[in-house]
Image 1: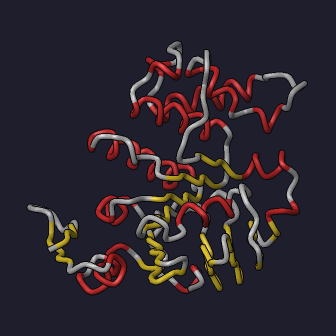
Image 2 (image 1 turned 90 degrees about the vertical axis):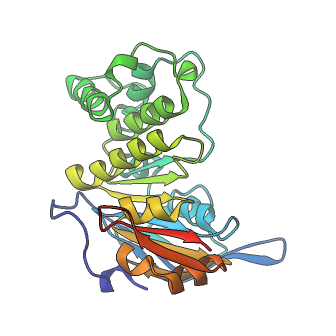
Length: 273
């Protein structure tokens, strides 16, 4: 389903830039189809969660958007332009990508890691100007890692490390962030903190976010829209309130499901029976 047909559930803050679209995309491996999407779009200024079983195609889809792989058939567009037509530098200025397995940050402090986010803007020989320093300072403040700026990244806890990497992405000043399971290894407190930060980025900065999540309750709580994949195909593309029904959840996960409201709130919670 084209995202343009969905109700606009975003914060009214103006979107920052361009959105993605996948058209007639097919990815194959070992004689089987890993992903088959006819038409799917992601709007600027919204948080869109990707959910589904392991192997449903979530990470494959995110890698296509991030130019980490190319489809066997079809086209991935950003702002109406094929992603392969962008130079590496122009694409990195517009799109920030956080993989599931974070790269090593040997001997880098948090401040140094964040500064790497400005590389697409100044290049190898460019001067690190006042504007670059300002962008880094804003990213550090927004993610709350000021007290960690002098710490080595590899000495941080899981939640602290995720915030440091998100600070680097924010310093990049992207139009869109692509996040592959950013809370998978975190405890509940840090999961909520990271997702609150991600949602704030979209609402306050107007950027688009596409995030792979395993917890449907987290997706419903923090996302403006949720795309559910099963067997490499989109089975639902819904606002959270439409997603959180027993029938829809059972179709996605193949288990009898029940949905209740969290005590004292209208927030829906789904669980297997």
